Length: 274
Image (cartoon, rainbow, N blue to C red; front, side, top):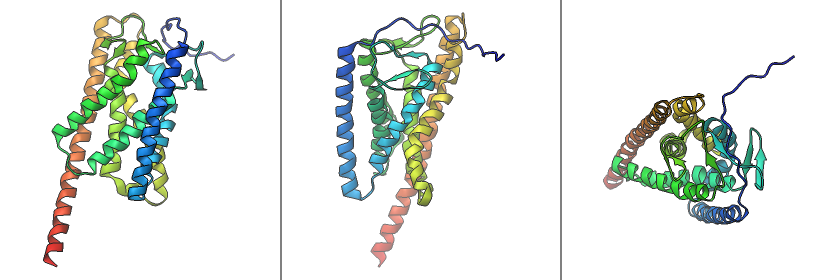
């Protein structure tokens, strides 16, 4: 006889997928994907590199992280009435696919292009992070308002505004930022036979960052009967880890930017001497 392990997962609320908001969300999100694809095609024609399209595809592949995030982070997608794109640990809604393409593929690509301009400063970095937070909220808050999904727990979910726990800003944002930082600061790695690994970079950076950042709050949320101070402490700890990852990424990017600027200045001096 095989004994099943016991996991602490609270019961999610009873919900039904709202048909009209679901359809509207799918249409709007796919329209945004079309804009990103058009931009990536334009960049391909301009530079000869299809990197934008590869990252968009990689963002779609990163959707396979969603079931794990849902279980650990206690995110409930109601099954009745849902357009399911795939189901493993739980049903994943169709609108999740364009969301991942946009956030983990498109935003990572836009960040990378901005970094390659070599105008990076720490102040500009945190401005960009703020804009990424805003993009995340613009996607999540309307979907939460129309109850396409919900965050839940044994009791009150900490740091929630409009149904959105703010620690998820760090869980979500660190992935695409780290993806862009790796491609900017270590581009030589993705050459030759390793070029194809770029397709899976959004998947890996999202999974790694969501696990690292979410670890404290995931454990707190899954503790039956945990007092509010425990879940709030877990939430603050997750935010602190997220800030540390972002700060480390910023320092790495800035150091590489200075190195690239010096290389460009040296090359310019050589040209002037010829």
